[in-house]
Length: 180
Image (cartoon, rainbow, N blue to C red; front, side):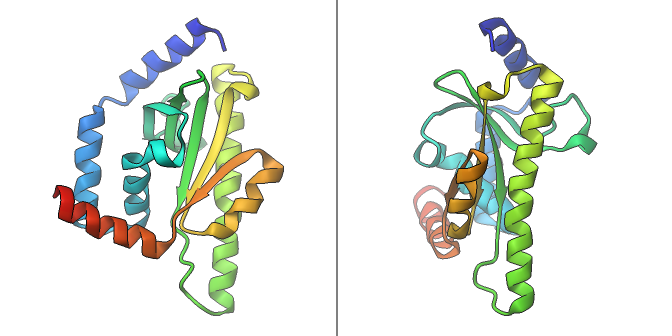
């Protein structure tokens, strides 16, 4: 990816992602205060701890937007970050209920695990086609509440990170006590 192509993409992102980092942070702090959606709480954790989870991330370019103009039918990215090594990192999040028991829940967890990888890999390919970005300039990440996904990323070149549901809830309570 040339500096010009990267600059064009960053300019595009700033046009379609009008919220500032501060506005996005306020949104996520609202989610922490009133966690009505577990997936959003997971995304709040990731956004507010991005340097610890994915250290190379330097700037959020897109949040819950399609990288292909307004074609949301082609998929929305949970997060797209510019990295310190001038690559793009596409991150998909998935709250996976690891505490539920039974055969149906095991099946559901496996379906969610497979889906999050499928989503991020598909987005990477669509992203590459849409923006004419070489695949080696695009990295993929998955962030879940399930440590079982760690090994799944190895064979498909996806960076996998997780936080347990207990740790996520503990973090939420501490964040509220400290900042809200």
